[in-house]
Amino acid sequence: MTFLLIPTEYDEWLAKSVNDLTPAGNPKALPRENVVEWILHGWAQLDPELIRRSFKSCALTIPNNGTQDNNIHCFKADRPHHAGIEKLHSLTDIVTAPRADPFAEISVAVNLDDQAEMEFDPAKVIIDDSGSDAEDIDIEH
Image (tube, rainbow, N blue to C red; front, side):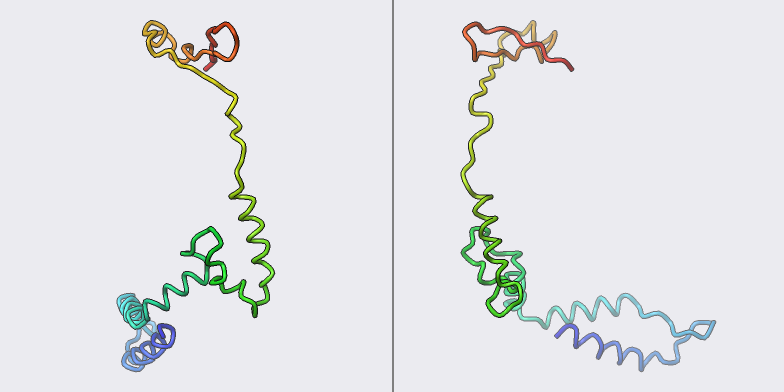
């Protein structure tokens, strides 16, 4: 409705301002206030449920767990990209699959009680306690 309403209001404005010309004889520019007013009026005419459905059909407001993928317009059965839903599901499976923690076997301890080392070189208090004897690791800046 918004797109149909604006040309009508524009035509009415144009008919009223047909004699409003610049000193060079060109029609004066359309005031921005009019355009903003027409757009706001057009949006007010739209059903909020239509806007919600539009956002869902573009996949902007649906959960990413696949439960509402049937709302995505381009993936509906009668659309040319219907097969894309299978690709979406395979990618979703990849993204949501459990992964191993790459840092699971790394153990780092920080000696916060060693105030002298903290004041001298805060990076030096990181120690490697994964071996039998803990030793200081000096980290270059």
